[in-house]
Image 1 (spheres, rainbow, N blue to C red):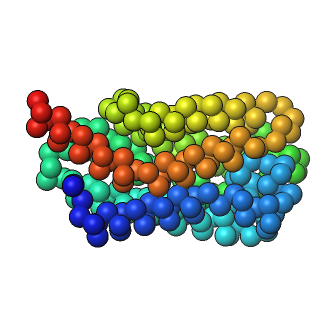
Image 2: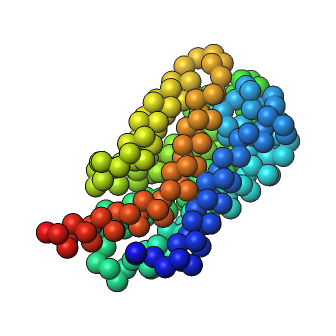
Length: 218
C-alpha cells in the first residue's frame, strides 16, 4: 500500500468531483438546448448565453480541484524518489488545469452555428479562447500518453488512449469542416477527459506500486 486509506479517499473525492464538474455538458440539454445542439461545448460558456456562469464556474472549480490533487500527490510522493514520469504527468495535468481556467474566464463572444461570427483572424476573443482550449486538451492528452508509455499493459490506459484518439480526431474534424456537423463526438471526448481526471490518483499510485515491485524483484 502506497497511500493510507484517508489520503486515498481524499484524493479520490477530489478527482471524482473534478471529473464530474468538467462533464457539465449534459446540463446544457436542459439549460441551453439551442447552444448544446448547434455549437461546440464552449458555446455554453459564451458571453450572453443563458447560465453561462454555471458552466464557467464548473470548469474553474474543476480545474482548481485538479491542481489541488496534483499538488497533494506530488507532496505525498516527493520522498519516494519518484520515477521521472510521475512529476512530468502531474506537471502536464496542472498545465491543463491552468489552461482550462484561462479558457473558461476568456469565453467566446460569439457562438458559431448560432450567430454570424467573424473568422478567428478577425476575432481576438475567439482566437485566444481557442488557443487556451486546444492547449489544455493537448496537455491532458500528453499526460495520458506519458503514463501509457510507462504502463502499456494497463487495460484502463489502453482503453482511454484509444477513446481519446478516436473521439479527439472526430471532434477535430467536426470543428474545422465547414457546416454544422453536430458535436456528439466532442461530448464523448469531454467525458473521456473527465474519466481520466477521476482516474489520475489511482493510476499514479498503481504506477508507484508496480515500480516498487519491479525494483524489489529486480
